[in-house]
Length: 203
Image (cartoon, rainbow, N blue to C red; front, side, top):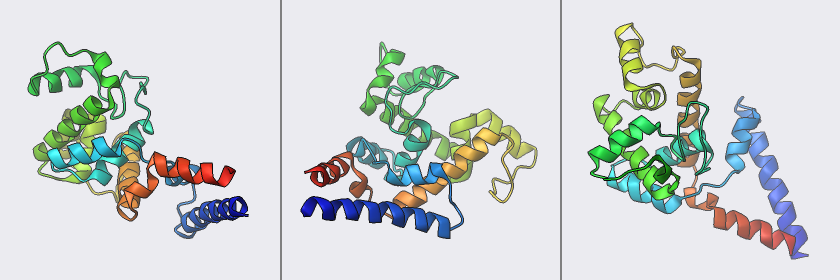
């Protein structure tokens, strides 16, 4: 009886997300998938959000959009790990943070990857006067590209599309995911809670 009840709860939960998404004219499978997937590495996210004065929901959103919490993710351009750091950027961050004998393979370590990515984002955040849209764009497209766009008249207003379609998509998804996580308790999306829910429903 309890198993059937939990199964109904899960189905109701899934349908509620779909209906909510459709009602907000944002019905797409990427959003639905994001709303159902658990947030991983919560401890590391909280740790470095506090250390570098960032919102944990923002870090979680960047990680989700970059790698979907896959610590072994490698992009076609060679960006590595949870926060998709380019090797050259990671080596520079390692030097700035005093890490000797750093190897790109070290970025497979979730704690190190999130630390480096968080530090780098905080660095960009200061460089762009704490403008979130500019910073997220720079994290994806590079600081020099964003400077060039700004010099050419880009206003960092999402009412207009960014010059790179990939970066435009990245910025919008990070902000959307951050808002979604901010509107919910991140910890209810922890992997352990999801596993517990589905394990109970299977009994």
